[in-house]
Length: 298
Image (cartoon, rainbow, N blue to C red; front, side, top):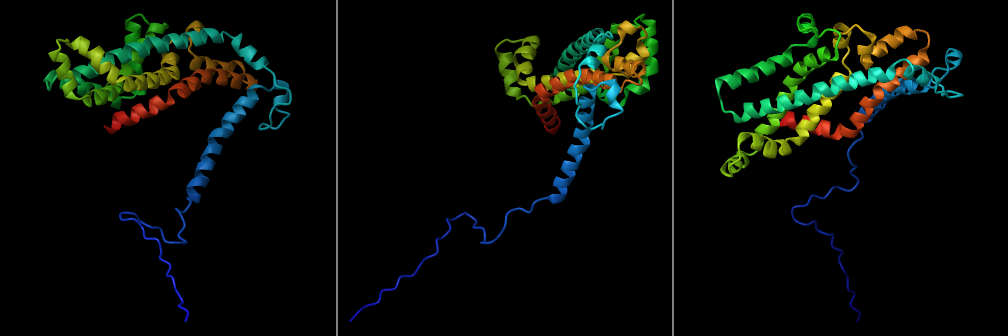
């Protein structure tokens, strides 16, 4: 007599708290429309940059006879040499002086003002100062260019780099105060109280506690203001006249007039003008984006 032994196969049971995906169920559906739009936008951004770079290495004699999007058959640096010999280092130095001379005082004043607004209590004077800074965000530069021009004339600063630095400082402070005050406001009050109990004054607390904790915001406003002032065109156009006081954006405009037919030379000046901005953005892009996002989301 034989006994047939049957075994039953048990399905594996899922652990409590876990969700088992049904067999045959696919993952998330790909967003084909979003991907197509992203690739289209990438092409819109990349193609002009590609055209500018390759054209700057082409000779003027072969530019109109070749395909605009084709790489240069015989790359040349003659266009860059021509631009550099046209006082380009002087314009670069002027832009550097104006940018550093405006960014450093603007960030320093904005940081101290933001600390006073946040830690100074709810006084009427500080509330008025904060409202004044917020009003500065609503007034564009174009709306104040005539009063600024008259003030610079009265101060005898017309056609000077100082005449460019002072208005740039004024227009850089409001946004810097807004970003820095958001960061300082989120510093725990217990840290300020502990510094006060240790006998630290306001100045020491400002630089020993608030500054290290808000360093991402300081870097953020520094990079943002540097990019804005470096690209400034309206102030140098209105407040300067001499060729030796031109900044890079204004010099680029004059290159367009000087080399109205020499397109490769004009684009070579565009590349040289944009290169410092690109380097600064590559170095500080993560700090810039994270600082702005954290500052406005807190």
